[in-house]
Length: 292
Image (tube, rainbow, N blue to C red; front, side, top):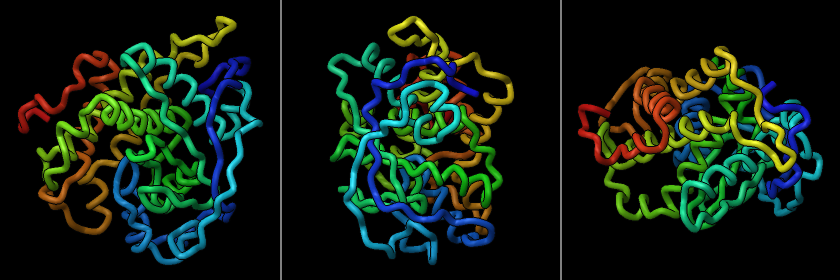
């Protein structure tokens, strides 16, 4: 468990949208498919066109149905349902960032059921979680966590899932505070703005998770239980899994000049740096390239 069972998460504004489809299972996605899946994780491009036959992929018609997650009221719901865990994370993240960013504007959080269209392309489990700046919205299909476990060997447990959604919230903070505008895309490579953007979002996620165990609901109940060492290792494992070098190794090549997210060691380091030292150490844009 991650959440205290009696914690109140009924104030979440998370919505569900899309068309329900089965997730990929067993050997349904090959190396190309899983690379596309994980490259897209945490802010990458829509690579669904590369993934043949992935349920929820780009060859299916979009659906527009949307509803609220009325089933997500308590920490117990968050402990037993991945979508409710994301809804619970939304409550904590909004509370945290409203205290650290003047004029904080809440992003939307949409749980994707199969697939749906966004201003940033198709959202599905074949794309992975992402933040869409024009909409100020986070999209996430929880079945993606199962794909990570089944086909990439990631543990993708409860705290790792919170790290992932916390990372996407980090991109929202970069958007509303002007970081994205100040440091626009300047191509790929180990010291590119893209890599620095991703590492900063990892740092933000770590800083939030350190404080999250102290956050309380309106009844004075802590939302989260103290983390176990296994849960923290799981979050670090998730950071490792989405390193550029680790992803590229799955297809037999490593080209640092094509990096967009940072290496596994860098992602682990910046998550841990934020967790240990807080938001004050998260300005990755002022760090020399050889210190990233």
